[in-house]
Length: 185
Image (cartoon, rainbow, N blue to C red):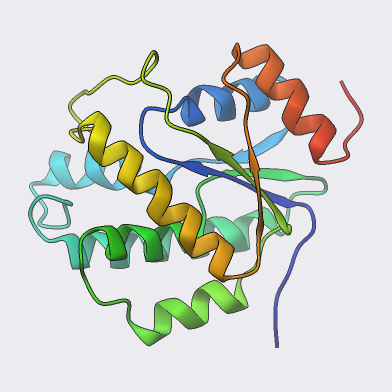
């Protein structure tokens, strides 16, 4: 049985392409959102001295990302309207492939079972806004490779990738709302 929701919209792309800023703007506009797994896991694991960090145990980190994304997917079912996700289950496949790590069969099954709207928004690399910080240690080159890896994972799963314009956040919000077929607020 395939769980699919046409009201679950994913925003993906490489790190530092404005995704989190855009998710926060969508939330400020009154839309439901689900936060990115990676930053939350890194923050929590760092706070407790845990091993599930991408630079320490990338496979364990991927398992926690999968768990986070599944929990977000289930939590979104109780929301009455559209939900915008800062990444989704297929991002974990892209992450593992980027690192040259095997993709376990349960992850492939999860990506096939827990579906999102067919149109997935993808933020292209944007060098002008890219910045590193304590949780984002990737270089711009790694961010670009991440973009291509996650794009490939979504495309292989039959999603239609909708590139976001390199534009101010307000314009990106309007673009996403229009492309999702939602009324403007």
